[in-house]
Length: 120
Image (tube, rainbow, N blue to C red; front, side):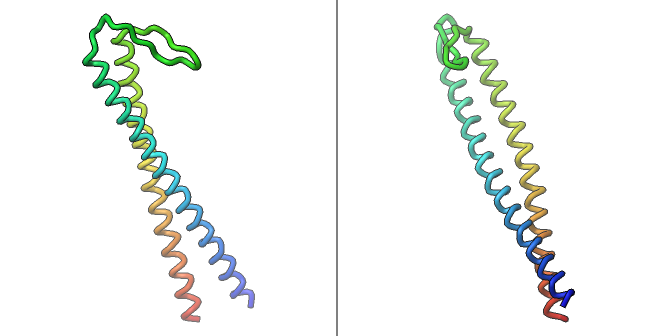
């Protein structure tokens, strides 16, 4: 009887881990999509700004106000934003790989546990 409860407890823990990992994978996927959209927005903005004359007044948002900013600074800030977003995407993809491996491990553990129960 104690063996049965141990298996039941282990099964519920593994199932909980599987569900939690799936949720984290979904959240990471959504975050990656949002970051990709942000990067694409920065690329398009940079492309449009490069077509504008250098002496055109440009304003960058800072909190609730806009500051007059030279074109070169605006372009540099957009490139920095693209680089930061790309690094975040790489980090999240690494986390997704880890979570995916963890999910596969949890599923295999569940299968082994069910197989052990069938065998005994």
